[in-house]
Image (cartoon, rainbow, N blue to C red; front, side, top):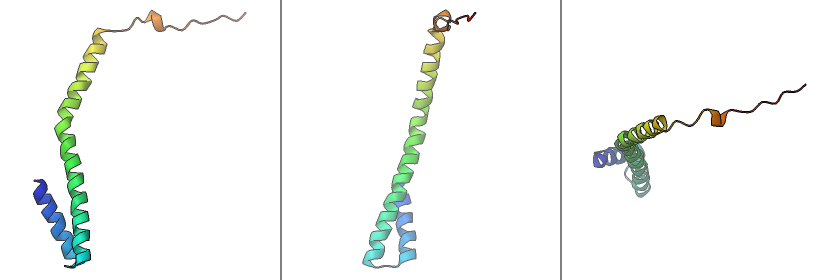
Length: 80
């Protein structure tokens, strides 16, 4: 999948700049940037179930270990 993304980005950039040494270097840079963005997107989708699992575990642990409400009550002073 990433190889196809790299080849498409390389081809499009070569079509825009023409076939020269500078065009080939520019095409390599642009295709590498597209590959980097695609890799980050794929990594995000790969990690999403684990992140949701971590959120669910923390939510369950906090629901089981509810803090004492009176511990956080603020004492008010009366001014006469």
